[in-house]
Length: 311
Image 1 (cartoon, helix red, strand yellow):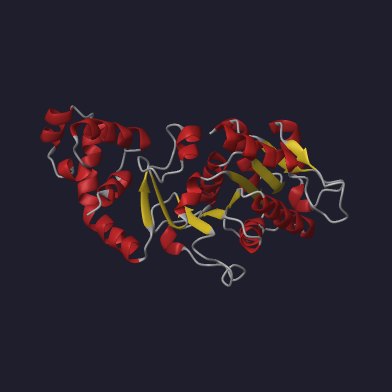
Image 2 (image 1 turned 90 degrees about the vertical axis):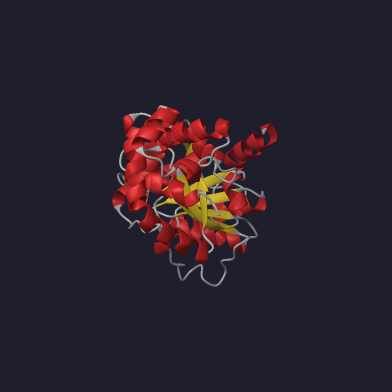
């Protein structure tokens, strides 16, 4: 039986976070002990055997009280064929660990083609009320990535997100959808229901399975998307909100940032010029060699391909 349910309980314990969970993991691993071996130890036993801090010991005690409820959720995940991916798993997205350092989600929940979580990936993000031009750009951008075997990452939300996922799948590519809520609340959008398949998409959540959607979670989801990506392309961003905050996150994390440059900005892209000015984003314009509205993805694709060669 997997030990993941014990890590789920510790992740939910008050006062513990990725740093303390890693301290626990690092203490057990050299001794060839699993978390199930020590989970039910008393406070005194934990202190004497491992010299854990009071915060960690308190976290163990809290996790023990939560365990029955967590175990029930764990079996629901197993029945639904949803994977529990702790931070020390080889399936865990390595770029999240690299880019978020001590602020990564300790556990990710997901299903589909989980090999995509460590594939060569570019994020494409845009507002839920994206303009008609932005819809075309989102679709074309994802299509370009698919042609170069680059995984697209987006937020599985209305607007640009579902367009990116649909384009990737329709054009023979692969895509990762990061949910802004717990995976128990997952529903397939109508626009994807006929084409979605487990080989072409990974659907993941960094939140406990029954977590509801809210504004903070959407912002955190976008930061996770940025951290997983070799580069971030913002198609359209209002002057404030989750997509604009994603641009801030990409800039802060040092991830190459690109944004659409319009000759006449749609209302839901009024944040684009500010992202260019304030966050050193490189503007993306229309390809000059075709008549259609298609973004010039050459520099973005070059970043992904160069990183892949260097790995």
